[in-house]
Amino acid sequence: MPEKIKHFNYLFIGGGMAADQAAAGIRSIDSKGSLGIVSADSDEPYARPALSKKLWVDPEFTEDDTNFHTKEKNNAVLFLKTQVTQIDPTKHLVTTADGIQFSYDKLLLATGSTPQTLAGPDSDLVVALRSKDDYRKIRAFSSAHKHIIVVGNGYIGNEIAAGLVQNDVQVSLVISGERLYDKKFPIYLSKKYQQKYIDAGVKIYSNKRAEKYETQGDQVKVFLNDGTVLKGDGLVLGLGAKIELELAEKAHLKTDKLGVIVDKNLKTSASDIWAAGDIISYSDAILGRQNAGHVNHAVKSGYTAGQNMAGKETSYNHTPYFYSWVFDVSWEALGAVSSSLRMYAERLQHSDGSVIYYFDDNDVLQGVLLWNARINLDHYRNILKKKPHLTDLEKILSLEKVD
Image 1: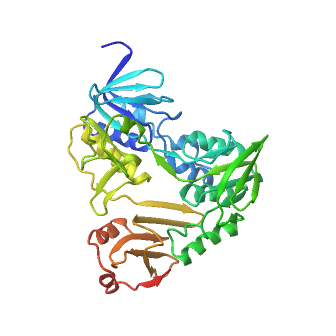
Image 2: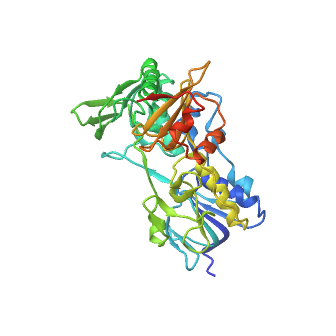
Image 3: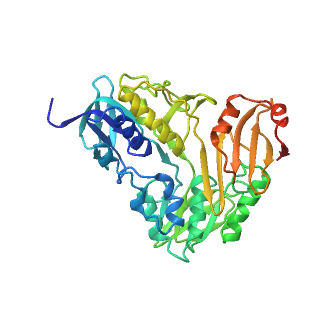
């Protein structure tokens, strides 16, 4: 074999949270097999949620605290700033943009997602937050009393706006809906949630869309669809993300509209290739075929894939949850959480907590949202698994119809 080809028993493409846990899964079974991680990121695997949450509100928590130390803990070789351009499943060969080649016995595909952007020039003043390097750029242009424009009504937009304003930064938040999270929450919770931002000093531009931006010196101009022009010292985009399927498709792995199709062991259609995290289309034990772009899914699917790669046959039967916390509000959710569904609220006694139940047109439960409610999520997984009818739950719970 030519010297330029580096061989590993286990090779990962992607260096995120799924990869970190896949390494741990492998090492729980195989302590000796060689392990290589090829990552386009400039940093070792780290806790990505902290980039829009804890790093902004906990002065004792630093960048170093986000590092998983994957390399040291799992005796892995890490290749950073390395972009893979091709996988040859037949030859068990991976090629990078620099012409480096890796061969493998078993491969994990965990390429994650790429954030959506707006039309405009490349600039360090404009960040679609995804990586630790993106976080550093935001820190650089968002010192106290500066004006930062945030666009997006999802996790990133909401969380980074809250984090910035709590660091004495002036924040303008542009959202396409009527209120924050109006596509997920009932009106009473959406209003309560939005009021937290208004009280903190965030200026919200509702029912607006950012169409493009321009930069001039150390300033950014954002052009909205109604003709409004916002000027600020930086721009953060939270416009969602697109899963990275190009490598999988070029390698002729089976995919569908949700991602790379995997079986119950997270194995793809190609021999000796597994996949985990954002990019997989998998069969959830409760919810059916799904994809999930959330940290809990990345962690659990990564670990399961690693164990299977190392020879322990184990099914991925975890139903992941998604969550957020800003100011004094925390929420967690399972299943389909959309305000287009029929919603019923269970108001919790002795607190401002609520549990929202989401039903389809046949009044069958589809999802659950816990708002400031510290209740074991397995309880709600068990409820969802039974696919109860509204009338069944009304027999045991005090439910109120909400819009």
